[in-house]
Image 1 (cartoon, rainbow, N blue to C red):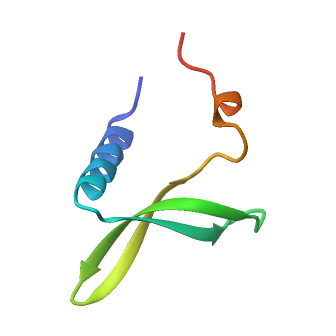
Image 2: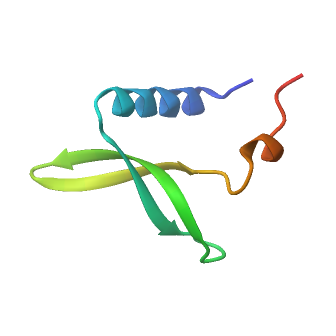
Length: 70
């Protein structure tokens, strides 16, 4: 079961995509320092931009990284 807060985040991500308010940013992993390509929603408040990270893209073959639900 997908938790409600995850569903809400996904809806925010969908709205950002529909509005063209997504960015792909290279960030450093907080634990390892390794570079990560992070999907972010972009917002603007009073001419100042802010970025909300949603997750990073899978390294390598994503078909090998995940299994579908059974």
